[in-house]
Length: 254
Image (tube, rainbow, N blue to C red; front, side, top):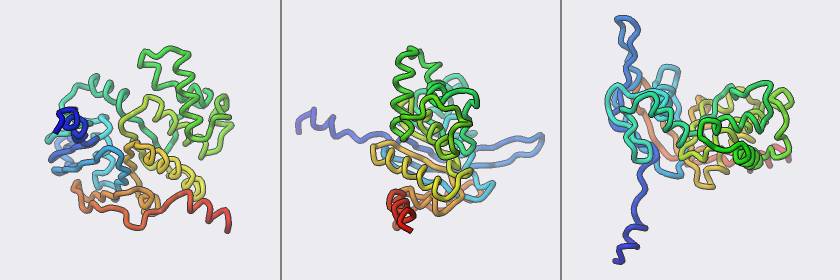
């Protein structure tokens, strides 16, 4: 075999590779073990929904995956880089470079336009004002808000605000997007519109991990991981996957 062919065929590292990850929180003399030896891989281009009851460990796991926290024990690699023992400053740099976050509460600055909200993650990346604006406008166009650049959050619906938040997560061209209950504040139809965006982004090759407690939202992913008592209870592909575009069309015809 030609060496160049061998190099081209090299297998990509998992985007998320957790090995026997534990997380213990200390509250005075009390130890709370939130994660108990979790091992999990998410490959490039996957769309994974993480589910579990309150206290199951799913949010703690998302914090570790998102480099918001470090494991007490075990190893965590992000796209092949061991980030489990990095300092807080190093974790912050990794977050800014490789991870986009979408939260339930949108977390937009209320008196700031959509395009300026989307520009925020680039302020710390040394990107010129002209390029920041161009990239933010491109990200908003990508989520269907190309005509809302100058609107403030008060001038946007809840679904449009979440689209701005998704555009903000995309603007640094991350390896991984983490979405924490992204439809929790939205009605059913708007939730479908948001899930349609995530499905389209995933079809374009973006790796997505979504935390949700709603089964019908999880069914839009390609794979579901269920946490219980700090362990992975179940990990299975979505066999009857919901496609948001089809559901929206059916809802419109009803």
